Image (cartoon, rainbow, N blue to C red; front, side, top):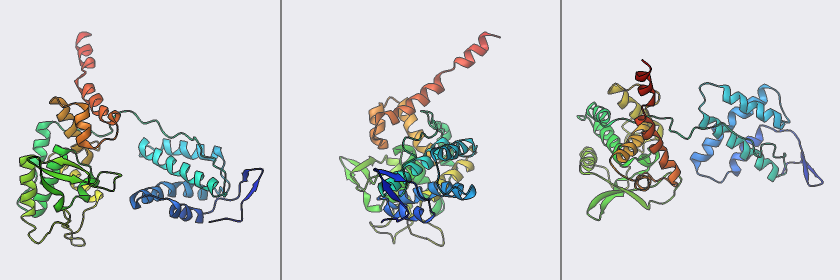
Length: 313
């Protein structure tokens, strides 16, 4: 795709106007999974709204810095969200320069500082037991939710891994029932997690209520009127997890679906499993990510403030 509004002089792009139609052109260019393209769409929309609001057609580096700083000042925006917005903007301007449309004024632009800690809390073993006990397992929906909670809390599955799982992905291997996974950012199902006896029983109890389902069907199906029997979304699983936590009396913004995964890691860590073993089960690509759980656990055990409070009277 070419744009006649831009000219090259001496190897440098002469800035023309940034137009709204470039937004869609860029998204068509992005070679990524549909979820990633949609993430870029959501992340770039505020930037184009910003340009329109202030009638900026030829943004400068200063405009981008002002936009970024404005994002940082929004109390409801997490640092990770700010960084997603900035990453999308950097990639957009890298594309405009590549296409000879507009110079890359976002190159090297820094995002927000993100602490090397988790922004979500975990559950203690007794708290997790309360969440599981609070689920009404007399209904199909309750059986499904209970099985999902157990799977996330014992194998540390992400919501996307829950949605992608099919019934046929459960099989025997090495004397254990396992579940093959399509990990985040992967196209294959090469990795697997082992299912403990109680977790396997919970899944089978749920599947008994779906006798019409076959191996190609999703392991966990939607029960909504609009999508009954269809594949669940990450958003619906997040909502189910949040409702399950609230039903057990844990209503905190820091407790989410990811808290079950966090719980699996911290309980395993406290029971002697190594960083390498935990990272392997959770599907981490680097040991540094897994070490965050160690930092979280160590911080919780460090009672320096309480000791000093007692010492100074």
